[in-house]
Image (cartoon, rainbow, N blue to C red):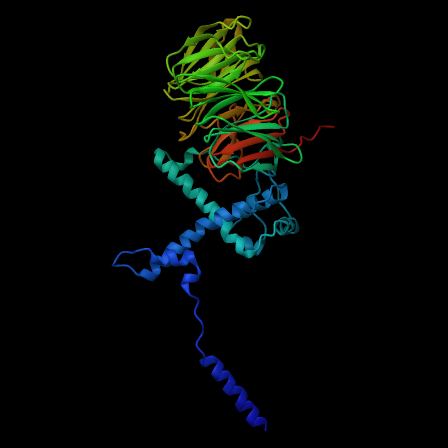
Length: 493
């Protein structure tokens, strides 16, 4: 009886093994089907070509889907940075080798338990490791293509030092705004504000947000038909004045989200500023080589002066007596302003060595290096210049130091780090083509890069500090805005 039972079971097993296995139809997966249908050369293996195309397609997709799953908190950001900096034997040791991260900005050696908690809190399973590696590979490939197209070596992108000062420590991302689908060209916090943030994009929109908990979008201002090139807040943060390639200047009422005035021009309007003392004066630079002052209340032209080339960027001094204008040929003009009548008169012209377009002109009232006012200038070819300003000599500029970076494909902007610079050094924050935010100390002859923030998936175009300088906002080519939170400084006892 037992023998018959064994024979019966064995026969059932044989019948089960002989049954043909059901193959998965490739038409059930549209991605696989579309990749396999693509024609391939006659001398190649069609199966290999199709599989390779499928893997490349899924590799690109995995990075996009992984970025959507990121969560904006300090623990998640640090865990991601630890993962992409892991050594080859990371899975065995579970301890990262490179310990300088933007989230901790210094020598930080986490225990295995801390690292495991950070990873578990993000719910990163084994299936996501390949996705994160793809993100890193895709970013490095993008950088190599950019560098090769510019004809420079990858060593031109300076890497941060292993030990960074505490002042540059960031605890991670405070919040992310990613509803914009176009390049964000300019970003600013409100005047003397720590929580009101606005940014303009190439689709002609202006978005006003609040970064206080919970972060949210207050208003989306639509009206420009082309790129927003610049904007500025009024002193009370109730109005925004914006310039655009559509040849118009618009004045917006922020609380109501309405455009209350349109000033039409005959050429592209490239930069704009409110007068720091008389907020009824609105200063605009355009592509017709003009610097103009308009009456904010009526929109009428008060005065204008002409320079030698397109006025791409400008900024006022703190007294409102001088305008510093950068043009498209590497010249900076000092223009004297009558704060009562609004009349303009050219004072000085400072010519730089490189005939390249200025993307940033920024004034600051005091610097430890010069013991007086200073001016920051950045050109598109990567020349970062630092000038002292002599207000007694009608705004005369003297070059104090400069830094040569890699040329830029986009109009990338830079900014002072005012509060950090009061401690020691002269610090600048700037975006980059390799999707990172860099911090430089201009007082150092070598190793000027002191920190680097990574998190963007596209070239970083613009950066801005809030009033308290505890939040840094950065925008990229893909339309994403990241607000980084700086670590609180430890008070000395």
